[in-house]
Image 1 (cartoon, one colour):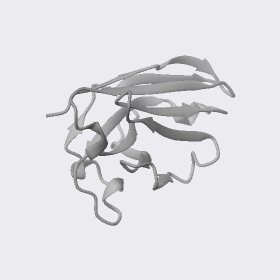
Image 2: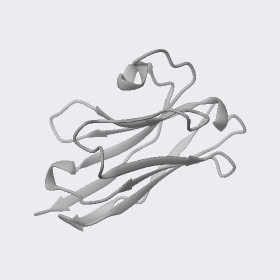
Image 3: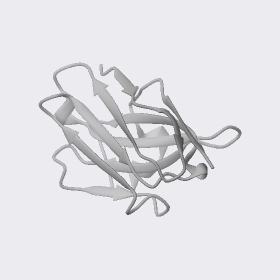
Image 4: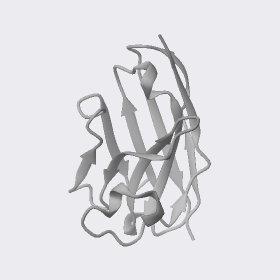
Length: 126
């Protein structure tokens, strides 16, 4: 069992930055690949970024590549999402997910994740 708690969301002007954190409970954090997703009102939850358990594989949604950076610290059981040059279209609730078994491309699909946090709101004003 893994419990995930996101933090770091808030209100920021366009062009600003935020750093999201996702703290995991338990002693098996380094057994999970991790992902960040987001969900805007009226829309499906969408993939943002993923990082493998050993950080040797990282992948981003096209629209955030070059602006967002995912990282993890297995000693602290935490995964991060550094978000720079934020745009109003980045406004959403951001969720982190933990995935026990990953196959090619599975990081993209929310239903392939085993655990989710409660989410943190990110609002970017024009």
